[in-house]
Length: 263
Length: 210
Image (cartoon, rainbow over all chains, first blue to last red; front, top):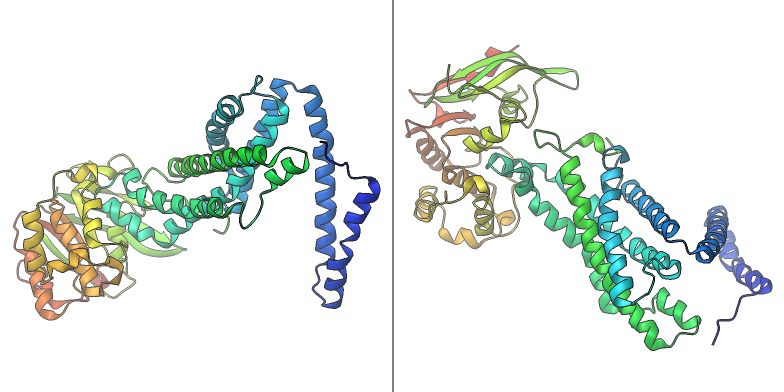
């Protein structure tokens, strides 16, 4: 069973649906037409590029190239986290990228080796999309975790200083903040796992079913990927905050406020 | 040389001079009351001693050791600082105590008998240990912060308006607790008369600085 290819006419009909939001926006003066158009164009161009690029990567299926592409993904993910958490990247972009590499590569290899049992662990058709699923889905949690850590330090700086003046090492005084940001960051992922399948059928499963896989296979993959996402999320947030603890404080243990873009 | 020497400290915030060429030598066991209108730099002095702000010029010396980014961690283990801001925790008071005394520097410092004697000494009910810190009154929070300082086993205290929210009977109790120990070195910023005792040296910032 093969998936139906969408013809050019089919794509035309897909875009035709956009008339509905455009008309609604026009009559209700939502002023969303230009931003909708921009987003649609950007999405189409980016996906067209990725489509061509992935075809190229999959055809070549070169181990080094696959590893390098995931490296680019990790780098962009780190940059996105810092940008969304409104942190200046010069202090921590590199250590954050390194920490993401340390957490995500072994996890991906574990996934491909023990869970899927692939012959070639760096097989492009698995390595790259799974890296994308794991990185993409842990991204939001990372933003939440890092943002929460910085906000709490700023808002409740006195609690931190109090612990320092009670003789705490920097790491001892920051453990409560670490704990809080991890809990906050992981809560949505945990809630998501509990409702999956009932509230929504996740994209990956839908994709596999459409591509002709049996629902059982699709569910196996979905369960495995959700676990991988959860594991990646907790490791990424933990290491991300540890990177902040190492790089975000001066020698006196004071938070480097110039790291924040708003300062 | 005293136990704590502050030499020619100057600091500016937003172009405004807060402390200018300020010096103070504190002898071991000395009790000092720091007075002066608000905004004059009293709290800044304590923040500088704790390394929470860095002076533009001048040095702070603790026990003949100049304070810098290496030695500040040792100073923080020797000096107990209780600030005006009592928003120091959320969750149960007993969990806060456990956390503070789980720090390496405070290992095996906590004396449970002493804990209860301080609780009664500060006119608190032992039930307070199971209450949520963030729901306590201002005066209760202040006393819990003081209790932690008293339990820490340190002998140099920087106290910033720690009696402000207590009634007068309690103010006297707290003052006595800190002033009666000859070996303790105490610097207290306060507007409360109770601190002005014969043995206390008074430094009035309104006169000292511009």
